[in-house]
Amino acid sequence: MARVYNFSAGPSMLPESVLKKAADEMLDYEGSGQSVMEMSHRSKTFDKMIKVAESLLSEIMYISDNYKVLFLQGGGSTQFAMVALNLMNKNNKADYIITGQWAKKAFKEASRYGDVKAVASSEDKTFTYIPKTDKSTFREDADYVYICLNNTIYGTVYHELPDTGDIPLVADISSNILSEPIDVSKFGLLFAGAQKNMAGAGLTVAIVREDLIGNAMDITPTMLDYKTQADADSLYNTPPCYSIYIAKLVYEWIKNEVGGLDKMKELNEKKAKLLYDFLDSSKLFKGTVVPEDRSLMNVPFVTGDADMDAKFVKEATEAGFVNLKGHRTVGGMRASIYNAMPYEGVEKLVEFMKKFEADNK
Ligand SMILES: *Cc1c(COP(=O)(O)O)cnc(C)c1O
Image (tube, rainbow, N blue to C red; front, side):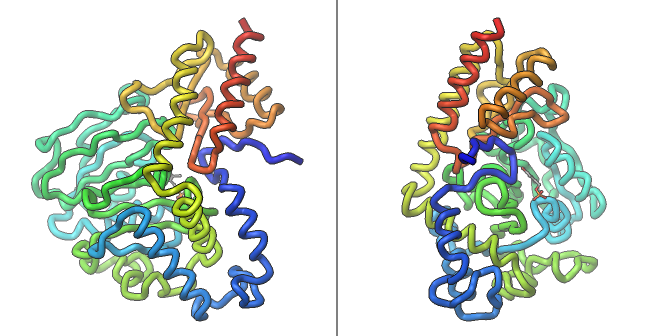
């Protein structure tokens, strides 16, 4: 069967050249006579591989030396607890901006460990915008401020970061890591599950400013202490070896084939513009997010009629555009157009939508 255009919010498409390289190296990774899946994580070959992966990520994201790059497990969701256990350590207080389900889940999890306050929210309008904040929004003695930078379900993104002054800013970047340059120095901690824009599921990357490591609460499980992982260079126990390997191939793809994150951003903007321009001109379909907060990665849209939405999703699936059904809390459709979605995929989707609109007048 021909490959489909997969618009899933995650796990999602990977670049074809990455999949082909992985297939080529499946039986024999760099002359080791084995697959990375079978290899000891204590072997020289693996050690070299994980170090290359880490340095490539640091290079393409311009991560400076005072940050630790950690390859972890447990998904973005485990970070909800890990962030709180490790960082809510001075005044036992943290401020959260609620921009969707993921931020809400992180907030709930952190509430188990301290005085956590939802300082702003966009729930009043089904999370279709990013709430405005300023320095006075945040408690001066908060240990950190938490945001979800790109809201996968609702399709919003921060184009401008909240001003938190000296309070460390923590961000979930699960669905927009590597989609455009991020100024890492503006954050105390960033984390992302790999399965949206980086690799298969199983790997979670955390980028943690060094001064925030080493003060976890006493109750913190050993595995959830960033210090355990930082001291062991992400090899305290068996890491998600194969996902790290795929991530390395994706980093190489971004560096060598795409040409870095500025270029990646350009490509992503071009793709997103095509779809948003169509949505803005269509009489049948419309985007759900206010234009100024629109995500480059996740594009929710509706027809306003649930039966028409279902008809569209069904016909699109038959035509090879899969996983366009919106999240159950939003309804309608959502096209996730991560890094690996080719321009041509969006172009063909828009053509299909135009035809569907003409046929359903
Ligand atoms: C998918 C997603 C998560 C959850 O990730 P898991 O790895 O499944 O735990 C968290 N945050 C955001 C923004 C996501 O898109």
